[in-house]
Length: 487
Image (tube, rainbow, N blue to C red; front, side):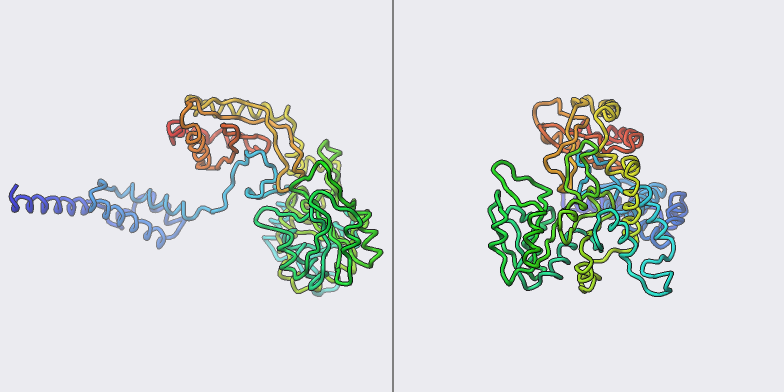
């Protein structure tokens, strides 16, 4: 081929590319389509115009690379609209929690009761008496909205609240033990999710840790021998997310309270998850209640609002009135306080505990704990049938018994007999890739589905499946996406 011929051919190809690019619709033409008008109505003309121009620029660049064909005005408008829809969708999305962990920290922990949702809606939509005393016509205290309820439910003299239990522990230690020593059993130096370590919190609070006993055995004399003029308080920490079993010993709250009182020291008990009722009455494992800790002599008790209690994220502190007053005077209290929405949700949730007989039907967290295998078995069969219809050619789909867990560091040894659906790749080779592809496809559904992988299977525990119709309705998306083929 001559040089002139090669140049002519390159020139012709370039001309064809330019001619193709000229077939792209104008911005005005795209904006006149129905999809663009819909986008303008929802997102505004400026945003829609920008999305259209961006899509046309991409198409033009693709033509110049020889990677795409022509683009119609209708397609450009639809794609620009989809782009705007995606950008406007919230990053925090609803999911189906089929992990088998009821209080899943990464998925938001406790579901709020209807009463709490209504209280939040009311607090959002109008000014409130957050810090206003109507009787006196002057500034009030925001903790007053829950103080009476907490006193009634726990038997404590007083109470205050902050934004989570880690903040509660931080506030207590900084207020009562800054620059001084806190005595804790070595077996109770907990670490929970998110790199929360009790020794680190103590350091940030400005106090010094005095470890006593051993990992598995701590005796009353260990605490007594550690007390000195530098000691500010004794601390007992509930090991809510692990258990030490075998040759063990720990000191009950009542004995520690007596020892602390003899030395004029407060005893602080961190219950972590914390519960206001004895779960054993519902057939669950016993978890120390806040009222039990107060009755046993703890001067302050800290616990969470969004775990077993079933409310919003909050750190609750109950106990001696004089100590609560000290906490309220600490400048950290303002930095850690609750906003009006969570206070409203917390007040409504605590109010449910005044009627314990109806609590299982009104508190979602407790209701999910108490769902029986007999109740869950038909639901698992429905889920099995729906999944088998879209992925059954690639996976064995079976309704099986399984175990759920409480989650969020509560009752780590307790399991809840449950039912679920297990999906196992039929092909022997590449099973890990197949499970990963299916799990990813489930996460891409309109309402993402989150399960767990165990024993070479993808397990979907139905204990927390609260809307099976919506779950089943979206399963055909798996087939359209080609999840079975991908697997």
